[in-house]
Length: 290
Ligand SMILES: Cc1cc2nc3c(=O)[nH]c(=O)nc-3n(C[C@H](O)[C@H](O)[C@H](O)COP(=O)(O)OP(=O)(O)OC[C@H]3O[C@@H](n4cnc5c(N)ncnc54)[C@H](O)[C@@H]3O)c2cc1C
Image 1 (tube, rainbow, N blue to C red):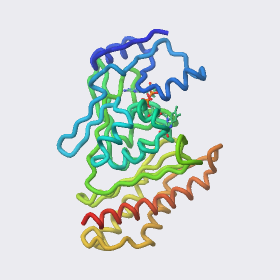
Image 2 (cartoon, rainbow, N blue to C red):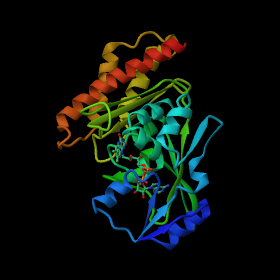
Image 3 (cartoon, rainbow, N blue to C red):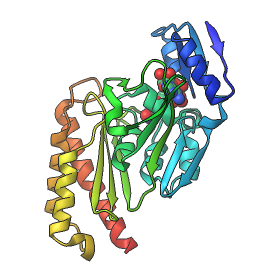
């Protein structure tokens, strides 16, 4: 197996085009599992670890551009204030070792329905920036990026450059159900983001459909109810019935399956509970900030 080690972004894109049999590798925390279990035997590995452009992040005009190779540990240490939902999710990933190596770009590359970065990226309205040597770069909204179980919208000659995430303008929450607190794949997961600046609500569901997905109906319902009750201005307490109705709509947006980690019914139920609690916590954070 060849080992390709580009040292710049343009070289990485050239190699991606020249070697369609090469598998990109960032932190390797998914790729090495696949190789070790002999699930994949690529002709080459395209190591992205020495491409400096991928390991940087910058904030400009209210948007954080997070290089695909930034590991979870740095999201936690450096971006908790600007991307609180993603940082909360990052804290739940694997173990310290996995958080040091594993990247948000790798989570997007694997596109597992259980990947923890996806719900907060969806809730925040993130955009995935991808590029090829032949056609340059293009933007894919996170909501369009996931195309099936462990499939994404990348073309064979493309790499993920970065993900652009609007910096939080209001509270964000992330919840994940697993069989224990650490080193666990989510049985179901939920993220929400309040956007008081535009009076909108964002959501992301994980592990409860073939792809991570938004609960668009629940978002519109809650934003509309908050608007008609004047709650965006008054910041009065969130009625429990409203939080519950939101949770039910989130659960209705899922299409889970029964598998070894949990039943479809449990996934739906846990989503409705997580969504109710998450939005109640987020709303109470918004009231405290007022
Ligand atoms: C013990 C253990 C615990 C884990 N726990 C969790 C968990 O709690 N939550 C969770 O979500 N995940 C977990 N994972 C899975 C894994 O850590 C994450 O999916 C992580 O985000 C992968 O990032 P990486 O940089 O290691 O990706 P890699 O393994 O390097 O790559 C993953 C995929 O993305 C592709 N890829 C990587 N970078 C790019 C790029 N720039 N452009 C195009 N394609 C690219 C690769 O080709 C590959 O298909 C765990 C894994 C292990 C081994």
